[in-house]
Image 1 (cartoon, rainbow over the protein chains, first blue to last red):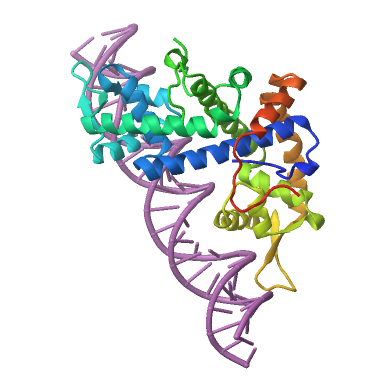
Image 2 (cartoon, rainbow over the protein chains, first blue to last red; image 1 turned 90 degrees about the vertical axis):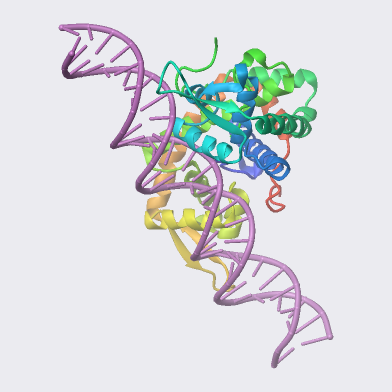
Amino acid sequence: MSSQVLTTQEVSNPTEVAWVRFLRAHAALTRELSARLEAEHGLTMSDFDVLIQLYHAEGHAMRRVDIARQVLLTASGITRLLDGLERCGLVEKKACPSDARVSYAVLTDAGLSKITAARDSHGADVDELFGSRLEPKEREHLAELLGRLPLLHTSEACSE
Amino acid sequence: MSSQVLTTQEVSNPTEVAWVRFLRAHAALTRELSARLEAEHGLTMSDFDVLIQLYHAEGHAMRRVDIARQVLLTASGITRLLDGLERCGLVEKKACPSDARVSYAVLTDAGLSKITAARDSHGADVDELFGSRLEPKEREHLAELLGRLPLLHTSEACSE
DNA sequence: TGCATATACTTGTGGTCGCAAGGACTATAG
DNA sequence: CTATAGTCCTTGCGACCACAAGTATATGCA
C-alpha cells in the first residue's frame, strides 16, 4: 500500500490529500477488521468473503470460478483458500455431474453456523469503524463518489 | 482484502454498500497504479512511498524508524524494502555518528532521478484514476469524510 | 472422427509482509 | 560502575497471494 506524504503539512495538492487519506483509511480499517475477525472467528477477510458468498448462494454452493469472480482473488487464490476452509470442515467439495471440469464448493453445517456468527459480529465491526462515523446522508454521498472510481476488470464480472 | 457481497443487487444495508465500494475502489486503484509504477519505473507502491519520503527529507536522508512511521509498513518491512533499493543502487545506508543503533537511508543520485521521474508519472496516474473523477468540491468532501475514519496507531505517528 | 481452442481447476514458484525473537547499543537509576 | 529497561534494527518464520504453466475436460468445426 502506499501513502506518499503522510504528514499533511507539506501536502498541497488536494487530490493528493484525498488519496493519502483514502490509503490510510483503508489500511487502518482492514487491519483492525481483519484482526478482529481473526481473533473472534479465526477467519481472514478473504475467508469471510468466500463464506458470505456461499451463504448467499443457492443451496449454499458455488462453482469456484464464480467465487473468484465475486471475491477480489485469483482462481489460484480461491483454490488454496478453499483448501483451508475444507481442512477446517467449513466447506466441502462436490463434483458437478454434468461437467467434470467444475467442482462446487458447498457450505457445511459447521460453515453455516460459523458464517452466521461471523456475519453479525463483522457487520457490527464495520458499522462501528466505518458506518457510524458518517451521517446517513454522508454515507450515501461517499458511496456515490466511490462508485465513480474505476472498477476491477478481472474478467467482465459484476452487473447482471 | 474483502468485498462481501459484490453484486450490488442484494446489498440492502447502506453502510455495506459504501463499504463494498470502498474496498472495490481501493483494489482497483492500487492494482492499476502499482501495475503502472512497476511497468514504467520498476517500483512497487511501497518503494515509491519510501523514495518520496526520502525525497522530501532534509538531505534526502532518514532514520529507518522514521520511515516506518510515515509509510504503512512495519520496521521489518522497511529493512527488507531498503535492502532491495540498496541493491538497485537507489539508496545507501549511512551510519549515525552519534548513535550506533541507528542507520540512515539516503537517496543516491540514481535514486533522486528515479523518484523525480516516478513522481511526475505517478502523480499524473493518481490524478487520472482518482482525482479527475471528482469535482474539486467533491474531492474536498471526500477527504473530509475519509479523515473521520479511524487512523493507524502503529506508533503515535502523524501530526506535527 | 479428429484436432484446435476454450474453460475449470491445480500446482510450482516467488514476492511481499507481519509477528515474534534476538542482537546491538543507549539511557536511567541505584 | 553495574543493572535494568528502552530503542533501533535485523532475521527466522509463516501467511497470503499473484503469475504462469500444467492437467483434465468440453466444445466447435472441418
